[in-house]
Length: 113
Image (cartoon, rainbow, N blue to C red; front, side):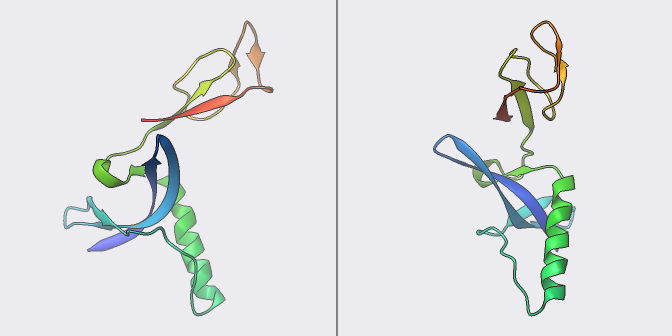
């Protein structure tokens, strides 16, 4: 059984928050389980802490997974521009907004799917 750090999306009272957990994989390399509590940073020396931090940073490059009943489904995050209503952006970005190309002054709503 292998494991790595992954970001998990938790939902509580309609709000979504993200935490880093250890995720364990079955013999088919599919996510099978995760730690009940998020990962803490600690170790016997600075080298161990640095190793943990580097592993935690690398999980940003993997898809986010839902926790609880939806585990191991992928949590897709999209952004909606609050000014013009355009949605399905993968990240906040400049776009044709309100009859002109905008780079600044935009606000965004995050959607978790």
